[in-house]
Image 1 (tube, rainbow, N blue to C red):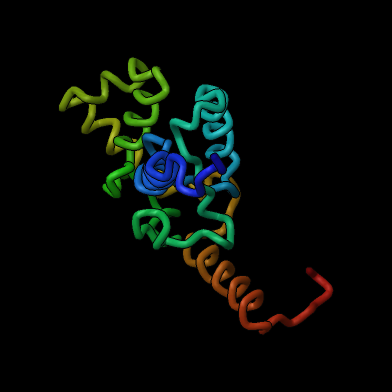
Image 2: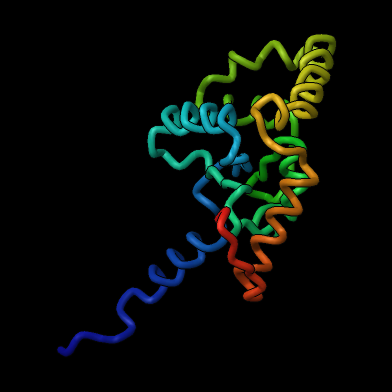
Length: 168
């Protein structure tokens, strides 16, 4: 009897649907790949993830970053505060991102104390201060300059509006 072209069609279709409808990661971390301190943290977290794919790491500094693919979080917003996207599309930000990522990677005890109301409020405020000064503390231009430079670079690449100069 010749082999049928329809052998096990359900298994192929089910596999395809499962792969496309539900991501394998538990949290998508949006990070600034141009920030040396952020990169240090991301490298640590990637080692803890150990290839399990529990955390999807997304570099917002990459010119190919698109808000539509990452919870609608635009570049400027993502640069102002850390954000993450959950598999259901929920966007979280600030210290809550660290709490969730560390819990997912089995290190929730590190941020567990921040769940207490008073301590959590203090840590959240400290993070806000850090986020406000992160760029200058790491020797980078202000947010408006970074956003403007990125926009010019993207326009140059996509619309051919580049002007060559001796400075690169």
